[in-house]
Every structure is written in structure tokens, then in C-alpha cells.
Image: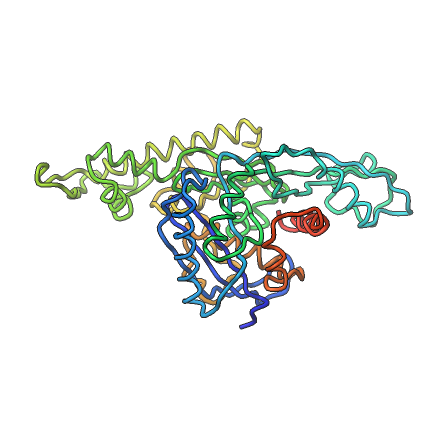
Length: 421
């Protein structure tokens, strides 16, 4: 095991905190192979709707998950790639223009155009985490992916800027640091999940990634190989559980158990003559219900969430662009029939997003939709290692707060994102 090639991903969800430690064993910059060495999970109690609400509780969850992953891996890590999401996320498109003075367009020209596009005024209460070049225009030729070597006098870049709330970011970093680790980079969770579960063909044809979390549902739409839209819906698996609690008169813990054992997100999948016994107190006595009633409750709330996502994607004008359909992932996507319901709502093909490609080692331990984000974070880190910015070599520097002296380094990281988003 090479310590310089270890990467760690940390997904702090509203219900569970998950950590994965892996070793990068392949050097292909776009698709490096990683061996999963350790996986750790703990219950999250300090997060609300994807935002840290209790630093101490969040710190405990992080420490438990990472220590479990370290024990399984037989290795210690200092730096983690941490996911962040929530309603505080915002995205916008920016353009940058550079004049070409040489015989042909060089990397320096592209860097200048990208720098202009990235130099947007960001409010003090927000933090830029991703600046992703979408496409380039050379003179009047549009839709160019790589203009280097072309002849022209004017280069224009279109860039997708993603910002997050500065306070949620600071609180998340603080919770990780108090747990004894450093945040190498914050990565938007739906982008990390896309790395783990989407194919290049799907991103090229047009696909909507829907990440059903416990507290929120995130959506990312790709078309022609690039990210085109990001959105967050403030509902998730916890709302489904809450409906079961109220609809069936059971406790939160029993509702979770019923959902995990007998639940289905698509009501037609459940036979109407099948019955199940409800957990009950002495006052309630023994109770039985049709299993289809439980499925009905789950179906209704999940359908509502998908319809809100549909409205969000419609608002961006991207429904006609989804030639590859919909991919559903996240912890709340494991219910049988989730893809069937998504297909029904969106009127297109749908599948579950499960990590697996480019994974070795204990890959079986992460082959579930709930591991999409954390696996994507590890693959993000693997890209960094394969590009020469090793986790160990960059660990200490990456963990430092951003300072003006690091601007050049940060710029390289943000431009490098174009290689796979």
C-alpha cells in the first residue's frame, strides 16, 4: 500500500455519515482505477437539510465513520474530500473573452479566457467551489470543446460557476477539523455522484441524475458531455418516513424498519392480497394492514418529489434534452420500484445508479445507490492523484484555509474540473 496514493471520501448526509478509503492503482487521468480498502458508516444527528446544525454531533459522526474506515483499511488518512449540498447551492453561467495574438490558440490563451470568466464578483456570504468550462467559441465557430491549436483572433469561453453558502462551508470544515482531519476540497455532492454512476454516453446524450437523500433531493442535468443544470428539492427519504409515521400510527424507528423491509416506491409492484403485521403498543393491540397501503404512502410522497424535480428541470428547459433518460441514486433510492416510478413521472427510461465502474478491492461493499456520493468523492480524489496532485503530497497544503497565495493553485484545480464534468 502506497500512502501517497490513498484517498478518502466523506459524505455527511442528513441520516448517515459515510467514509470510504481507497488506493489509486491506475494512472489514466479521466478514469483512474481505485481499490476500495475501507468503508465506515455512522448515524448523523447534527445535520438538517444538508447543513450542519450541531458541530459537536456532526464531529462525532465524522470521527466514527472515518475511524471505522481506517480500521478496515489498516491505514490512517489526514485529508478527506468532503461532499456538500443543500438549498444554499447556486449556479450561474459566465463568459470570458481573450484576444489571440499568436499564429494559433495556445493553452495560455485558454487559461486567460477561463480566468476572465471565473473573475466574477462573488458576494462575501458565498464561496466559489467549482468553475467548469462548458464550451468555447473561436471567432464565430460555436460549440468547440478544445480550441488549442485552432486559428482565430477571438476566443470566448462559457463557464459554469457553482457557489455555496460561506457559513455552511465553514461549519462543515470546522466539524471535520474537530474530528481530527483536514478537508482537501469540498465537492458538490450531485457532481460527485455523477462521477460514480453516470457513463460518458449518458452525459453526452443528455441525462438527469436524481439523488434521493434523507433530507434533500439533488438534481444534476448533463447534455453534450457537460453539466447544464443543478437544483435542490427540500424533501427526501425522511419525509417518506414521516408520512408512514402519521399514516400508520407507528414510531419513527418502526417506520424506518417497515420501509426497509416491506416498502416499495411503485404501488403496482405490490400484490393487493399481501398483508403485514404492524409493530404495536399494548394500547393499540395487534394490527394488520395490506402491504399495498404502505406502498401507497411511499409511492405518493416519492412521486411528489419526482414531480418537483420534473418541474425544476422543465423550468430550465432541459426535458427535451434527456435522450438517455433519468438515473436515480442516493440512500432513499434503494426502495423497489424507484426507477419504475421515475420512468412513469418523467415519461422516459430510468435506472438505478450504482457505483461499480473503475472500482476494485472491496468494491462489493459500495455497490448500492447510497454509496454513490462517497464513491464519487473517492474517484474525484483519484483524478487528482492521477493528474499528479497526490493526496499525501497535497494533503497538508490542501487542508489550509484559502489565501491569496493559493490563488494560482486553486485556479489550476478549478480549470482541471473541465476534464470530467
